[in-house]
Image 1: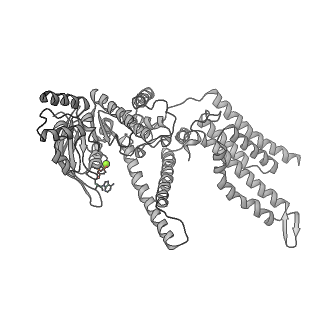
Image 2 (image 1 turned 90 degrees about the vertical axis):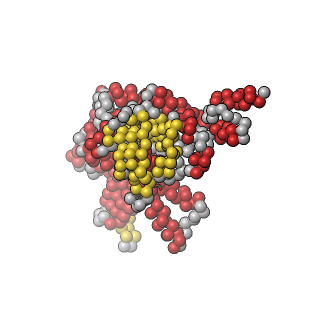
Image 3 (image 1 turned 180 degrees about the horizontal axis):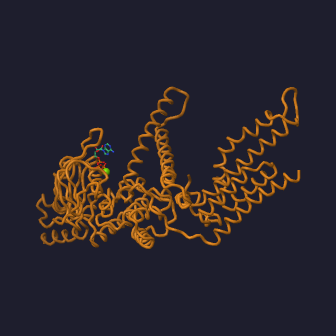
Length: 254
Length: 276
Ligand SMILES: Nc1ncnc2c1ncn2[C@@H]1O[C@H](COP(=O)(O)OP(=O)(O)OP(=O)(O)O)[C@@H](O)[C@H]1O
Ligand SMILES: [Mg+2]
């Protein structure tokens, strides 16, 4: 949830109608995550990196958002080679590393990272509200979109409050130790955080009411899609289809 | 009869028992300007929230002749613009433009109207050109003015501001004062709370001294020269008035109490004239 992600940035992805972007990029993600061939998954991963570069999302931010998925996916890469039965590539006494296991681990890892990178290109290049309103234009129920939209501001708010609570306790000389006091201070800080966030979200809600909000999102400015938006969408869909066709071709050749 | 705000016997307690307002009654004419003055915790913010029907106590609040009640809320909010003390409470959208457009869109304005009102509001608060910025990335003073723009874009007849000049640098403060004066001249009723006694004569024709209950209400020029009254509430007199009232007590001045620089200069001339 970083507004700086799109502030001052422009690329052909940034100026692409979010509706066309969401639909076509979702298709590409589905296409890549359903690939069964390691080589095509590698190609898919390369494509995802390509999109990330074209989108001009700052490298630092992109890497940061990939950190958790990597930690989550790494076990597949490390465990599957040992657990999947198959032709053993290497074996030491009772441990065997299987070829199939390595391939499967790499496949899951690459597809996962590609999906996360593409999701970032899909959602990170425009204000979050624009994406949310695009979802509504595409037929998602209003309530769901509102939850989506305001959870964005609340997460933002929570992280700000978190930051200020911890800054305030460390400004007063608090240092983390493994002691009972540390646990108590953390407990209190967490309580404060919840109270403050609650009070603030209440005031935010009042402020919204004062601006005539009545539980419904105002309709967004209707934007008509341009030819360029459609062309970009078609290109991405073509890539998604081409990947699947390539896969079929590989199967029939075998 | 023709009151912008008419409060009668209003009392309000927060749920855990703090009595914030007790039997508050006062009236403000249409097109008037009123400053709420009182120490921290006096109930200023609490009172202001009532003008928009955001909270409701016992007693009655009427806005432009309409009772603040559930069935009128949308009408009330269309006519009363509210600027909160902390701009972070008010700014909710990922871009400044969207945030300022939030109110007009809620009112169901057409795209052209929204566009027109948003650019006007951003223009008058001096933030034109920052439309695409995320409000969270603005400086505090800019946020404060952005919050003002989000209320202005709804073109309210009554503008309610909770400490509009606090934490602003001198230049931004002067700009806000000038903007509020312009709005007032164009017919908008202004109600604000402030701790800045020196700005009160520049901002409001009338003053309400509040400390849970109404301590005093009257013309700014009369209330703001009452040394004891102000000191009892932990407040001070505006600087020029303070000096010249002291001179009056010493028998060295007997003109009209000056509140702004030009008046103070005239008063000085008067003193040197009588000396000669
Ligand atoms: N959300 C709340 N819940 C409980 N008590 C509250 C709440 N907000 C304010 N109060 C209490 O109500 C009283 C009036 O508060 P209020 O914020 O209206 O004062 P104020 O005049 O605006 O003060 P300040 O000059 O500090 O802004 C205070 O005693 C305060 O502690
Ligand atoms: Mg207050």
